[in-house]
Image 1: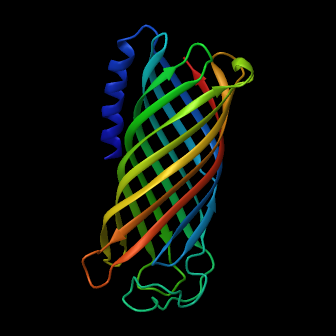
Image 2: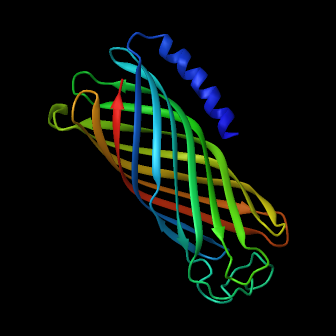
Length: 263
């Protein structure tokens, strides 16, 4: 699915760029520090990891506004502590716990992909820019359970959904010292949770959102650095009409930095 989205997006981006002599391509790559938390009616797993991120933006500018298409991917690995306590309280197994053994460190992996498109509006009098966007977001979390003494040794939590939002960018010292940006987003997500012992459940629905702030400093007109802070929070409802409904919450906070180049 991600590969077909990428190919389709590149065709759309090519068409976008070809329609404007002021078209711009921006690439970026960076890293950061992230904290991932999975909770709710399940074991509370927490992981700190260092994701690597890459992105590609196609934009078409006019004097006052422009459209853009953005592709982004990030991924990283670490360890989680979801089974650190023996017999961790959880209702997912139909009783008060899944009767796990204590395992303080299990493998953790996380990847995120987003395809967004939007429009930027620039106030040429003060340099303030606003934007609105809509897009598709996917995420995959892999949680190990090799030493927890459970019937399964690995779980995956995959999410897909639509996101909408907007933001604003404010120049610092007339733009000579870069710019500060803020953004907010909302999402309607679906989720598939499964393990390697046959468990497979789909979320009935999920709502959540994101907040972010950034600072961008251009070294030259075509090269610079961006530092940002991001926070995402979603709540997923499973088996709402069954005798054993449960809720899974997901929170991700990231502090990162990336270098970018424009062509």
